[in-house]
Structures are given as C-alpha cells and as structure tokens.
Image (tube, rainbow, N blue to C red):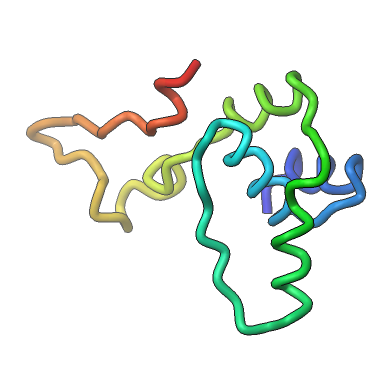
Length: 95
C-alpha cells in the first residue's frame, strides 16, 4: 500500500479505503465500494463525514492513479510501442 496513503489514514483516524473514497468523492467521482460484510458497509458510509485538507487532496492527486503507471507490461491499457499513447486519467485533467 502507498505509504503516503497510510500516513493520511492515520492522520484522519480512518482506513486507507475511507481516505480514497473521500478523496474521489471530493472531486465528484462516485465510488462503488461493494461488500457483503456489515462492518465494511458501515466503514464505507463513514467515509464521508470528514474533510481532507487541500494539501492532502493535492498530494493524493499527484500519486500514480492509473494502474498502468504501476506495471505497464501487465495491463491492457499499456501503451504499445507503435503508439506510446495512454489515455489521461480523468482526475489528472481536473487539475
């Protein structure tokens, strides 16, 4: 897990999942946090009763957000040698 995200989770006394859900929601991006576990359902609902600071939101936005940034050889969205093009992540365009 991303160390910056874990530090923020500790800072806000939340889980990393709650921080990510809150961050995405702050940009108007809905999340689909599916679970059958009642405890996780409550955790998901409690992801929206705190506010990330502007600097923390910017820090998260600067992290790699496209799974292709992590391992280009594994994902379908990896650029090909011929095109070397990858679609921009929607939140990167929000800056």
